[in-house]
Length: 194
Image (tube, rainbow, N blue to C red; front, side, top):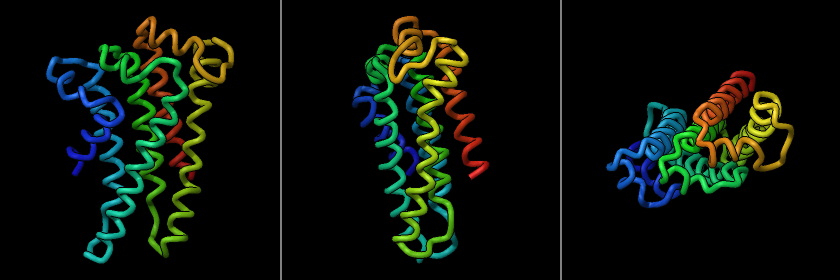
């Protein structure tokens, strides 16, 4: 399940050329696919649990909802960049892949956490899921405030700015790694206090 879903998600989000890019040792493509696998694994581990067949159907439904949510949120968060993530990753830009990996894994952590809890009814469980997903909004200021304004001292910007230039033009792996670490750190903090 992990291999199939993780690869399909990565190919959907990053274009179908990913297997060929990995075969030609494109490090950025490998990193992006690994991030999808990690995020997918976190979600699968949180959704598929229990010890009866009765819970399997509900678990599979929440798994499907969670995976759609992951892909949707990755697309929405990647709109924050002024560069095309898929093009940069296919061009072996490791800095872009690190940024992409950070948000993907962070979203996997938050979405996986959102699926936790006892199933009471569809209505109550879906409402609780949606409320828990609100924590994903905390990831947006990470890029613009923590990484851009505080760490890089580049000032506040709604979209783009120095982060995008450093990653797309400068291929600055350090900036990509800091952004990834910030996303994952905030996600881990959010789920620990939620």
